[in-house]
Amino acid sequence: MAERVTIIGSGPAGWTAAIYAARATLDPLVYEGAFTEDNRLKGTLPLGQLSLTTEVENFPGFPAGNMAGYLDSSIDESKRKYMAPHGGHGVSGPELMELMRQQAANFGTRIRTDDIVEIDLSKRPFRMKSLGGDEFESHSVIIATGARANYLGLPSEERFKNLGVSACAVCDGALPRFRNQPVVVVGGGDSAMEESTFLTKFASVVYLVHRRDSFRASKIMAERVMANPKISIQWNSEIDEVLGSEEKGVTGVRIRSTLDASKKQELPATGYFAAIGHTPNTDFLKGQLQTNAKGYVVWTTPQRTYTSVEGVFAAGDVADDYFRQAITAAGTGCMAALDAERWLAAQGIH
Ligand code: NAP
Image 1 (cartoon, rainbow, N blue to C red):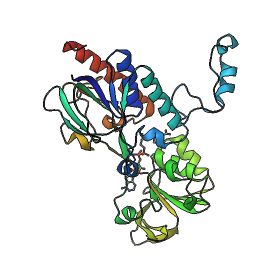
Image 2: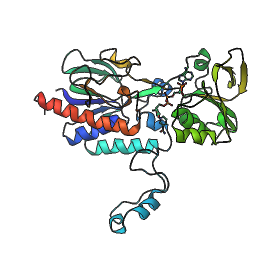
Image 3: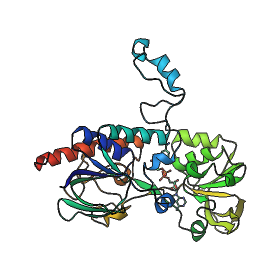
């Protein structure tokens, strides 16, 4: 028998869709992704990008700082006594994702730790195959596979992956090779700000290489970086080459000025972190859904999560190259579950 709703992806969008679909008694099935080396290198492991981040300061309901103290001071004692005790801080990305996953599981969501590698959207019910060999049909699908970090595409980046090249400071920053050593971050958005700030915990100095003379990042995060004495900003600069050897891995980078390409400089570093934006995880769709110029799935109707194929809904970063926040992903995950529920009901599938 075909599934009623299959959710592909396990970030805030996927789990929120699962919570809503499960509570609507649709018995959702979530493919949360597989723990493969390929997924690790691409940054597409289960629980999505938030599981690769540190503190989440902007998800409503989780104020940073001492949560227990905050609750004591902000919520009336008569209500406090009914609340479970809480640990000493706000919430981290991995914690938030585990909490969402647990919440979905509590309502009966079935979870498969596997990747969907093939999907046929040409006829309904839709047919899918997983990496682990599952083959099944589903009346509706919610695509919530998110996006992954980009690299510049230099051969020298490829050569030193796992030898000092990374797109995730939070995953790799604490490794011994970066301790008390100079490291390089490239980019000028919030990711670059977050990664640089995080790396100052371990590195002796963080060279932040940005191609322009101002940051794209939010003001608060950019100001934090500019005030940090351990971050040396290299304005108007691009990475020419990642330098290193097979034995030592990354030993530095050569940068060139964007104002005068003949001006080059070498910076010593044991690490190189790319923080230059994202690519949506749509490879498995093989062009079956309409996408925009950057490859993000297109929502075809305002205020709906409908895609170009009826019965297929999209939520979170895979369809959003503009907001790309945990809370907006969760919001569209909720919308996708409600859209799927109503669409299934209209088809007489309950
Ligand atoms: P982004 O905002 O798209 O920024 C990408 C940065 O990389 C830009 O500064 C861009 O330079 C630079 N860049 C892109 N291609 C490049 C290339 N080929 N060579 C050199 N530089 C290049 O991406 P992001 O920082 O990953 O952020 C994505 C979204 O996630 C944003 O909405 C952001 O707010 C959100 N986010 C939020 C948080 C947070 O709130 N805690 C943390 C991380 C990310 P230009 O500026 O010159 O284009």
